[in-house]
Amino acid sequence: MTRVIGIVSGKGGIGKTTFAVNLGIALSRFRKKVLIIDCNITTPHVAYYLGVDNYSINLSNVFRDEVDIKFAPTSHDGVLFIPASEELKDMNIEFERLNSYIKKLSKKGNFDFIILDSAPGLGNEAVSVLRTAEEILLVTTPAIPNLTDMIRCAEYLSGMKDKKIKIVFNMIRKSKSEVKMKDLESFFDVPILGSVPFTKDVMDSTALGIPIFDYKPKSKVCHDFMEVAANLIGVEYKKPSKIKRFVGKLIKR
Ligand SMILES: Nc1ncnc2c1ncn2[C@@H]1O[C@H](COP(=O)(O)OP(=O)(O)OP(=O)(O)O)[C@@H](O)[C@H]1O
Ligand SMILES: [Mg+2]
Figure 1: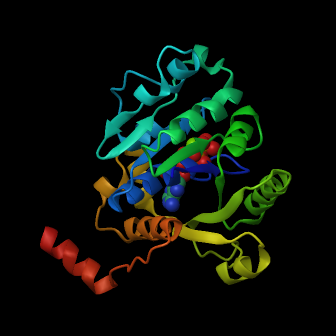
Figure 2: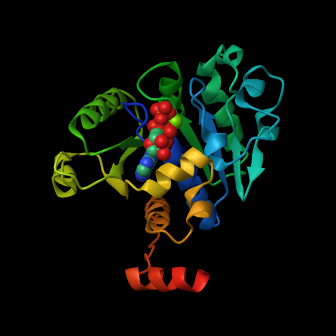
Figure 3: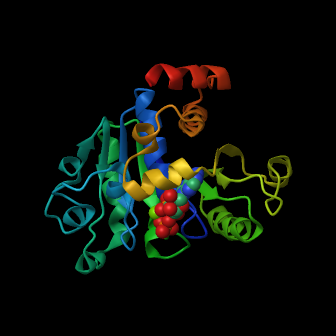
């Protein structure tokens, strides 16, 4: 059975695409068949974050019935993805049709996971993702304004039937201005899937268009992404200790 996962947020720039791409890579390392679809047609970044610039088919080709969705995925390092077009003229597509395309694709059963990377907020693109995905991962940081936006999103979702919602905390800095993890856990009714810290390496990796799994494969944050993926699949993932990671880095030198 294909699990369709929507990666959404109340606020923009919170790390949805970074998370969608690295979750996809992490799931593929668990030998899951993954397809990432860039559903943010206003500011698409999936292809860039994956480090790909030579694709020939994008989501707009599918929506214009130029290509059947089953032939649209581009393959990169064991992950399949469908990029969104970067051209302004291609923004003019009927995004509400997303649901029917994804239904058609998931019926074929070729994928374990279809990850839909959404635009922020509750506009057309985001609402189509919310309607299409059975499972929703709400990405936020532990800062109060971002939490407020996330709660609005969760409220919107409460009006939709049969959605499995989970929260992912990203860019955790452990600074004084943040709400503490233990307080967050007791505050929300919605389960927390996992968390990823703020790291300069992740920021640099997206700016360079090299996934963190290739840019700094031994870094702790890769294990954090693996752990979130394991939680999603429902398996245990043992992160290596600090010493093991240190020795691993020495051996690589
Ligand atoms: N864990 C992290 N540590 C450090 N920087 C991060 C982390 N996650 C994301 N970022 C940075 O935050 C910025 C925004 O990330 P990203 O593009 O993934 O956000 P987004 O929510 O998809 O944005 P949009 O709403 O525009 O689609 C990028 O510069 C990225 O490098
Ligand atoms: Mg994005």
